Length: 143
Image (cartoon, rainbow, N blue to C red; front, side, top):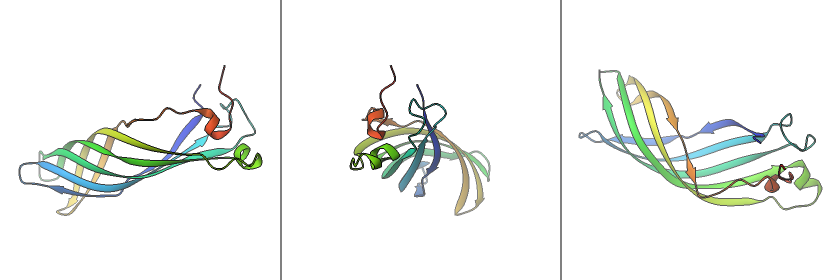
C-alpha cells in the first residue's frame, strides 16, 4: 500500500560542460514526503520524511540549436533520511534516521536562458540501498 506522497524535490548544483560535451556537476538535494492520511492504515498519524544530501554528477550534454539541448547523466551521492511522526513524538521514540547511498540516472530537456543559465525539465529515478519500513513512522505494516 502506498501512503507516502512526494511533495518537494529540490537539487541546486553547479554544472560544468567540457568542449567534448562531457559534463560534471556537484550539488545538494532535499526531498520531502508526507504521510497521506487518507491512504494510511493509521489515519491519526501525521508525519513526514525529510531527505538531505549531496551528490556528484557525470553526464553527456549536447545542444542541438543555440537554445535547445538534451542531457543524459548519472548522479551518485549520499542522503540522510529523517522520519518524523506524531506517533513517534507521543510515544517518546527518538526520531529515526537512515544514511543511504543512491545512484540516479537522469534525462533532461534543456532551454538556455543565456550563456550561463538554463531551464531543465528532468526525468530521473533514484536507486537507493534502503528499503522503506512503515515502522520508522510508527505505522503498523499493512497486512
